[in-house]
Image (cartoon, rainbow, N blue to C red; front, side, top):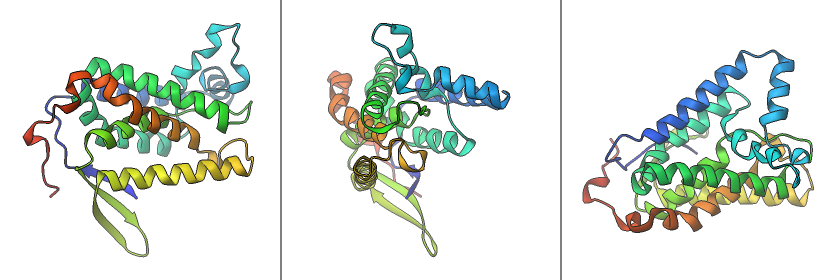
Length: 231
C-alpha cells in the first residue's frame, strides 16, 4: 500500500517539514553532480557505516545526523519525501516547529543506532530519511488514529482504498517488524533488498514512546476542524 493523502488539515504552514524536504532534495542534487568515485567517498564519509563509529572519536558519530539527508536514488528520495509531506505537517502542527525538528533529528538518530546494532553489516553504509520519517509515523499513529489514509494498492487491478490511519500504519509497522526479524533470523547482515528494516522499526517505536513527551501540553490539542473528508 502506498499513501496518497490523509484527512488531516494542518492549521499552519509546516516550515520545518518543507525545510527538511528542501535540504534532502538539494543534497541529492549534489550527489547526482558527483563522479562515481566522489559519490562513493561522500557515502563512506557521511553515510552511517558501523565500522567507522568510535567511542574515542566523537566526530565519527556525525553520520548519525548526516546519513538521514542522503539517498541512494530518485525513487528512494521521492518515496521518503512524499511520505513526509503526507504525515509530517500534521505532526509538526501538533508538536510545534521547534519541537518537531528536535523530534525528527533525535528519532533519526535512535533509528540509526538500532540499525547499527541489529541490521547493517559493519562496512555497509546506511543512508536515507526513512528512520526519522518512521518516528513521524509513530507519532501520527498516536496523535491521529481516527484519521483516514487514501492508499494506492497495485494488485491485478489498480485500487484506491481509504483506510483508518491506525490500520494503515499498524500494517506498515507489522510488515517492517516481520521483515526485520526475518533478516535477523537469516543473519543476512545488511537488510534484504537494501532496506534498513531496523531503522524503520526503531524510528516508529521512538515516535510512539516519545511523541507525547515532545508534545507537552499540545498532545491533546486537536481542533474540531482538523478532520476533513477525502474527495
